[in-house]
Image (cartoon, rainbow over all chains, first blue to last red; front, side, top):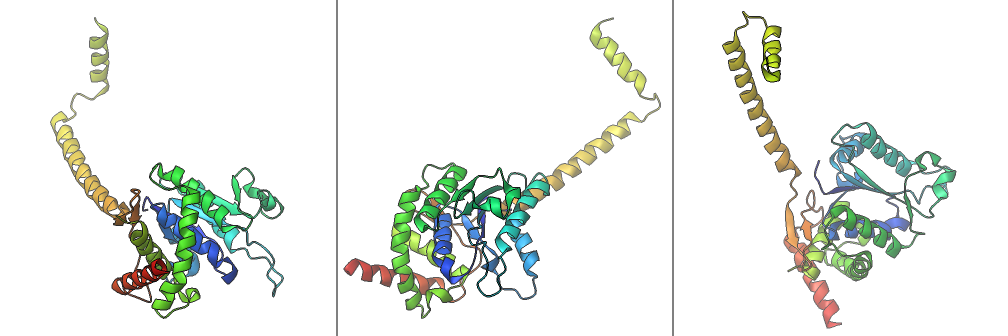
Length: 203
Length: 93
């Protein structure tokens, strides 16, 4: 288990793309390593096993359950995010000494919305972002700054401002490599984020 | 009889007199030596796995860590050149 790995549990849909990029950017900018189910595309590894492996390796996690809503086509709710949240909490609860110090940050659209569909997590501190990317960055950066216990890690407003610049450059960088932003893989995004931060803010 | 001598006497009386004291000590020393070697090896392996490589440091002192795995669609030199061109274009307006 690496001491700085953060498991990201969120939707990978097009309408959540900006939120996802914001989470990755904030995690990297705060001196942590983002991890998620999209980091490897090994057809031989069962998805559940892959998620368990990543959860085992991550002492921190960020869960956004805001998109737990009915699918327009099937009329059924999307349960992947609450399921992975449950896995992480289970690992923390039953994983023994090496896992009971795992830390979790849970986002939802509104503070008490979860009570109508996953009331078993009552008592957890749910952070509302109301769908706003800047609010998401501010909450996440503050949490990571607190967890890192490093005053050098910038505050949420500063990170949100840097992310605004990054978003402008990202489509240009993708175009330079003959890609659309939507075609970038998770590993591409993390590499671009880390290199861009060092070019922009590096010594 | 003082307290300490009493307790020593009671300790001695618990052990059988024919117990091979020297052998017991040797075994325990060897066992402890072996255990400590194994533990130290294990610790070093775990420590090397735990340490994240640092890609660079920002001007405000945050260490940016090396991503897990390589980018899928480009090499690092290609990416750095692309970032430089985009930033230069932004700076020139």
